[in-house]
Image (cartoon, rainbow, N blue to C red; front, top):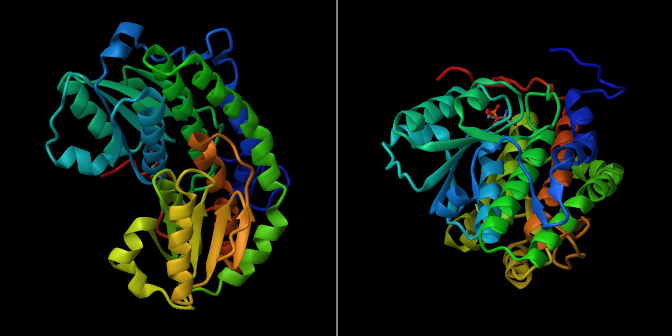
Length: 364
Ligand code: AGP
């Protein structure tokens, strides 16, 4: 595909920069203020069925799997349905128990990823209900699913996904409010999340406007041979996605760990030449996250925090605007897309077409 780069040097930069508009698009026409809920036209799930769901299992690959992890957290916390995400390829090969009360959700930007499609087909063959959270309209996964939510990120050309990741997570937030309001999410909490969703486009723009500062930081971290990313609960998938982005386009080795797992092994790696990027939202886990920063500092590790308030233990803090706790991961991922981008740029990498990768993996 060739689309106009609109004055940007790479599609990745264009797509990162488009995120405020993209999020606006996924929200448009879906919010119902009268009932503080969300309407999703293509879901094909009536309220009685929605009340009968006992579990949600989300399947995807790569970045879409990470978006699904955040989606599972949103569904579990807002709709109070046990939910988890799993790589589609793992799921298909472990002969999973397919349960009639489980709602399966397949996540895919392209809608053509073979492992995801094969998982959907296997599920359908066993009589499961499968929804799609897909970007490309009319794609194979969208067609194979019983219904779903389009992500409306617009065309994504760069091999690595940025705006589609963000929009997919927002689509999950919409789905979580929808399911929640049919179940036990109160009007006030529904409204709280909806108000938070509406703030996202301007807050995203605020982060994007800080690009120059992130670029300077990237120049410092581009010298690293390896980087550690940590986060806790909602922050962990953000760390996973940020480390994947960095690996894909800069070829710097990166690992992501739940912050709490550091002391169970990876702390052995920490020394001045291994910088850590820490996701530190101002929520009920703030003190726990600060304790992890202290552990790293005590081993002379360099720390770059992505946080709502300046972190004393960190060498640098990238400040992001605060939203509702549940929606913070959406915003915290964005500066790290820019960090990966500028790191790769400083290293002269072929950003839109990283080596060994294809935009969608349509074979096994
Ligand atoms: C994203 O940066 C990657 N290129 C990759 O992990 C991708 O997310 C994965 O292959 C799944 O693709 P899909 O969303 O089109 O199904």
